[in-house]
Image 1: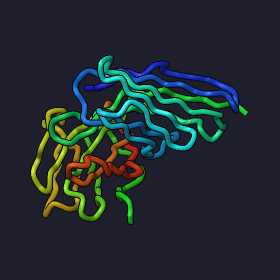
Image 2 (image 1 turned 120 degrees about the vertical axis):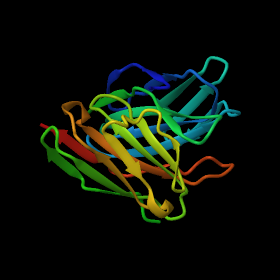
Image 3 (image 1 turned 180 degrees about the vertical axis):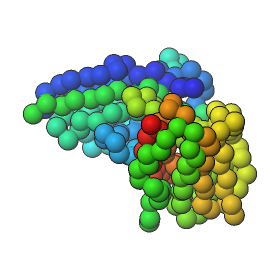
Image 4 (image 1 turned 90 degrees about the vertical axis):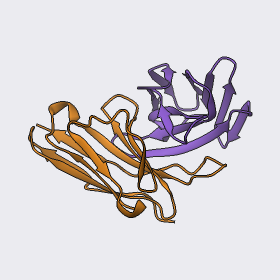
Length: 111
Length: 115
């Protein structure tokens, strides 16, 4: 079963614009992670935010976490055509270490 | 550091045939995972090993799927007999087990097509 629901399911923007993706989850977490997946390829880890953190930055990425609302958002600033991919949130619960993925957001960045 | 190795990269089989996938995790990673990713969906955990013991196989269709991790290193996932709905990418991942709870690394996956 999927832990998280992501919103929107698909997002189409122009280069230079910002892209925001949201993730909601159901159970308590130890941390939440975001991954990127290019078509037909493996998953690439982008960023991890712990349950006691509220915001984290990595280059053009900004992740927020609201544990009271069981939600997270991923912001990609100044997007590029190379950012075109599917983005997944994944939660690492408080039990035994494992990742449960959301449904994903397909991002298309047009030149 | 070498990544998680998977083979084959692609496989096409007919329904009712059997197939096996292989995974070699990152050296020293005690935990190994197999995920199934159907087109357009997020990865779904099939089975999780801690060393060579199964931690979670609640979503593994045990009537047709089996997995083993001998000696706590390499792992194989088998499907016998395959169904059309098994067409998916099968991802292997490994992680270091510890307080830090980081270090998940995914392989490139095996794309299975059942015809």
